[in-house]
Image (cartoon, rainbow, N blue to C red; front, side, top):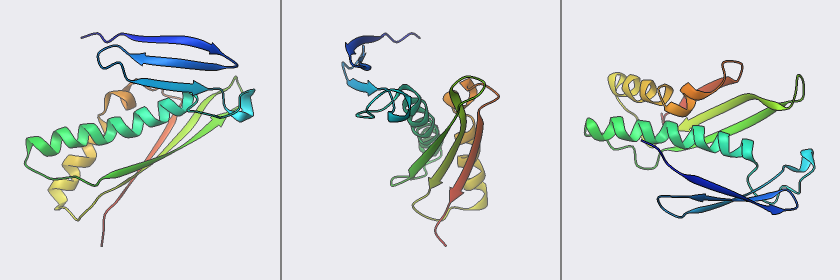
Length: 137
């Protein structure tokens, strides 16, 4: 399956990204620490956002297939950049907060699903990904 994404440079280090199937639009800007103003997601911010949303989406698919409810699950992703060799994402710290306690079996299922998301599997091996799951007591 292919998906078309069109990107247009709008000047001053800004782009407009259009998702073909839905016509949804995302604006980007270079980050403040790399010549931009930080007025929108940077391209590497979108990688962090893609990882977190992918992990939760794949967990949602696994949950649906087993009749589990994970509504209210949230993720926070903290992106750390490396300056050398060359500017790149060095680390992504992901915290997934679950809305309720689950059995050990359900937890293993959901956590395995999160780690099997396509974005995670597409990242370069040098990008360190640390994932933490939080459950209520």
